[in-house]
Length: 166
Image 1 (cartoon, rainbow, N blue to C red):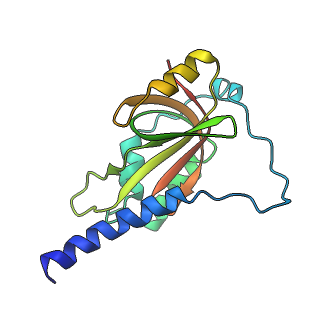
Image 2: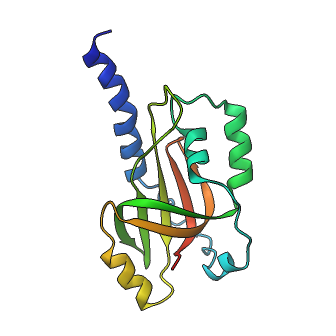
């Protein structure tokens, strides 16, 4: 293969993952949505000591982890509360919450070519949180506490509900 073809093979999964993350899944019309767990419930649950980079390395495309290892990781993570620090890529307001998306993160293993992102649905506790969210820019670091809701197409992990850690 030529170097141009190899470059396209490396870029295509990144573009695909960005497109998939940008296309949020909405519930079908006339489907009652379940009430979202409150942010207060986050304070009542212990934090799982899991490094974000370990999650990235498990799910990034081109890594050495197996489907069995990914299944074990997701079984451990879903429903758990985590506290992670990451760089902000974008923030948008949706239904009274803020969707905070991390920059795309690389795996640390040789040969890993995919990217991974965290999407946290943050409910501000007060006006200070709102102001902090309004001041954040692409590339700023933020620390978020949230409940792991799931992993989407091996490219994004969703935290909902979530809150800013101050």
